[in-house]
Image (cartoon, rainbow, N blue to C red; front, side, top):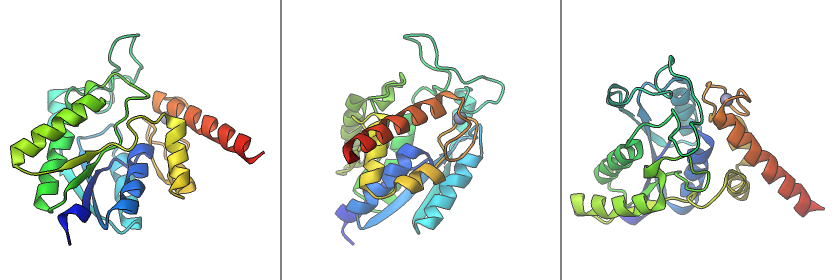
Length: 222
Ligand SMILES: [Zn+2]
């Protein structure tokens, strides 16, 4: 199979990366998934990712990134640190500096191994959470660096970069996987699948987007 038809999706089992998975499956003949295990607060995330990969019949690579916890203890990896939004202008407590830099670099090394040209990530600037390595300019810059570092022609795709959460739901709907994403994915910081705990910042963002999308869809059906 041609390299051009092969893709790797950075996959966490959440709403965004699962939407990216279906986006990729529509475009590329061969899709493989990569999930990073860094002792997430909820091991449930890995379980959900595994289940979705299996259901979709996709090869799933789970890479051990426990060293991330060693470098940057924070709310996503340590149960004794609370998740909060952070003050205006500050980074939230969920921030692991350089996380996407590392994830995308490892994804590219994997892509090189399996002879895939395309790498898909669900990062997004719109619901900007203060992560500098989720910005478009960073992804574009890294794309150049990765190509130079491995003498290759990877293409980093960010289908969600300019979408807000409501538009991400809309994309799931267009891909015909709205219900699947709604029920099967895990976004919640407290490890509750589907609509989640309803109390954490991740649930709040997901729920608000969902309501906005449903409102807009009902408007359109009138
Ligand atoms: Zn939650």
